[in-house]
Length: 200
Image (cartoon, rainbow, N blue to C red; front, side, top):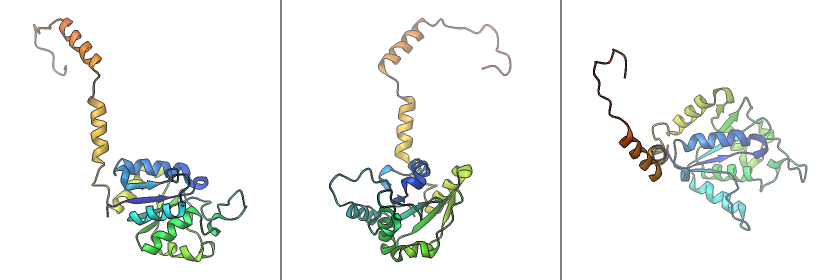
């Protein structure tokens, strides 16, 4: 499996872990293959349709769950977010379950899978999906294991590697001229004796 991945998370529950996982994925995947966050939703559009459209394009949905994922509340209403049919996370999970694509609960830092009573009926199917676990102390190893199971370990982000290689070896014209002048002025060294073993 090596298609597009949607990372679903709650900002008040796992924003930092989500960012770390997102960046780790970008080191292995093209940016256009990873969907995350609602910042890219244009103003004035139907966000439910936009989210459903993103989920429609993805082949895997990762649901990042911290300790407060199920009980996160809306400060404006004081009600649990999951109880709102238009809750971003609920919309994302519902769409993925409806399509019957792989939906992977990713439990963060010891968080436990919610009880069935904590989930609305339209996303209870989440409980029948195999979960993965990612902890801060084992972050690199845990994310690599997740990537491997998703089929991405053997497919490095070639575009990113090319960009890094270009930045590493790219030299400004002014630096080239300076280096040329230094080579011209540098005295030529002639070895009169053979260098001792171990020297470079």
